[in-house]
Image (cartoon, rainbow, N blue to C red; front, top):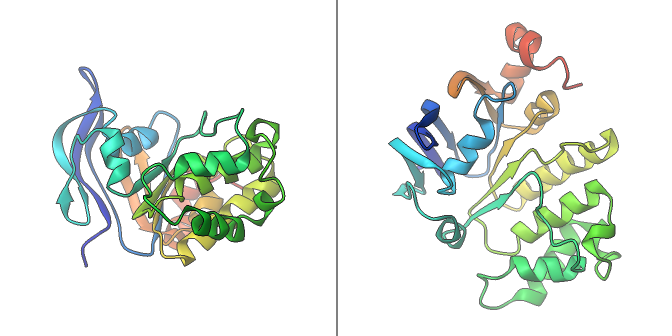
Length: 237
């Protein structure tokens, strides 16, 4: 089976500084894959390499077997890779519905129907559709960002720290929503500090240390691994 997304032996960084060293990650159809690891390990950098936001010096990024290495970000989105950055991911002065409509910029038609699908997937947002996104709680704003990213026909959804700074209640809701998104047929690659919860909803995970793969396995295997638990899962309860 061809992975939806694969990063193959990547070396990449900013300017002359190499951050990723021979990194390989893949996401199969209908999978949630988590990238965890300490701060500065290169987790968000790995995601940005997919979006053409840094310089890849070796290796390839492939979408459904097609080489998209160093493709500009706007084109990557048009190819079907939806990305939710950690911060500044909604238009705070626009309403919830206007945010979702902005997310549909590459969709030629069917926007009202897609809005209905998003309100079904994110029921909290339906009653707040006419509120400014900036007036919402952090968790609700994150829901808007995810719904906005899914307004197009996403081949894969990339989430960068979706639960950062959220209360435990909203963390749980976000992870629940991620599982609902997977059930609609969209695979997900997630970078997450709340490692234990992320691995709990993930089919597979990668542990990055210093820009390289340190461990990989199913979510359950990584949670059960004593060394990983000691090093990375202490704060994830």
